[in-house]
Image 1 (cartoon, rainbow, N blue to C red):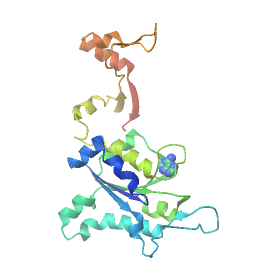
Image 2 (cartoon, rainbow, N blue to C red):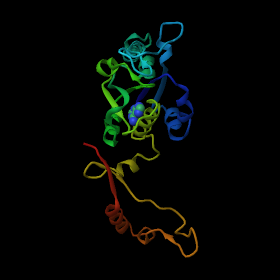
Image 3 (spheres, rainbow, N blue to C red):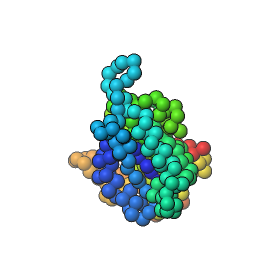
Image 4 (cartoon, helix red, strand yellow):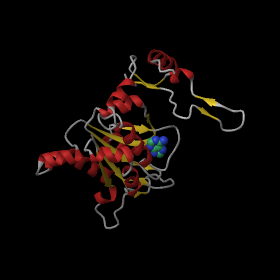
Length: 240
Ligand code: ADE
């Protein structure tokens, strides 16, 4: 799976992707993340990525041309590349691809979409900024407009990181034990969240207050533990 992220703030991403599970997944070649600075796809000396809105209004709007050029490059890279295998591996182009534009008015992201995206070969993220993005990007370039919730952020960079994380952890081998992930997929094809506890058995935050681990989990009776877990599970999202 290759994530191609188009942004005018590439630096936002580097420290986050340098950590923990994402870092290991990158190192092991299970995922690839390429950050593309939109300014590299401008032609003027000022590297202009935005302009005033037609018809007036406050703020600036991200221009369509540099976004179009970046997405076209990513889609065509495989064919254009002299070394086809290398080009394909680096950009994941020419395979199952979705172009996603982040916007608060988009379809709300959920676990089901994370599963669908994890089956693709390439995701291209367009991170909007400022007051908006030229509408032609939504109309002609993006396959999906995606929101991570009913609130307005300053741009699509945080949503992009969220989707990378939600999708990457579903890719076989990214989490330590794939079997653990399988266990959590219920018969109804939903995704289960179990209640989890660890030591100490009794935690006393203050005098006469005791927070206990449910006894059944300490019993060693696997059948009973399974029953208890099933009874207390929560379905996060349906897969189909
Ligand atoms: N850009 C600004 N707010 C957003 C949101 N809630 N989801 C996705 N992209 C956004």
